[in-house]
Length: 310
Image (cartoon, rainbow, N blue to C red):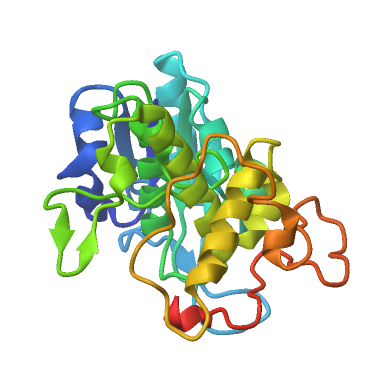
């Protein structure tokens, strides 16, 4: 994977190249980073890359010519290396990226990333030289360098050989459309809080069920929108119901209990982990309107602690 970044501040990318997973991948040749400063493609003494906006208004707008020349230079270099790179502009107006979108883009051979500054770039650059616009969230930053580094780090993690354990990326939050499960390490006891017994059992099947249950429960509590889009399999539905049932058994009249939910049974017994345990019906995750008396994702039953106590 090759990244070519058009940026006015190439020195900022030392944060990506100095240490960590991305830096190791770059040093090992798993990914390559080339920086292009549009000031190097100007012809005037002051190396001007911006100008006042037509129509008035505050701030400055980045000019087409220096950016376009930098993009073309990057495209020429990547083509000479046999790489067909697409051009992406980091922008609050872009399409929001999620883990699935990152995974799709990790399969491309290369990307030319354009990091804007000031009030943004001349729209004609986007129309003529940009293939995609990407957004990392509904907020505004001072420039596109940080978003570019975030995107590169997310993509590099998915490249073969970038992580010490190939399964690490598969277990990350969002990899399966769910938040991550809780993690524990030594010692076994911290204050009054103990590592869940199932993680010490050596029963790998039980551990896998517990982790999936925790991921489902966390996602239901913190990001119900993810479950609404993703849905549940037949095997996941009773696991989530068991999590919610145990949560409600702990919650009334007190703040969130310190211990995680117990490990799920391999097969729910008669009457266990059924819809009735949730106060009427299982969470509706198919996008339909929640029937009266049914708990929708993210809704807490009476007596559940408020979010700030969970």
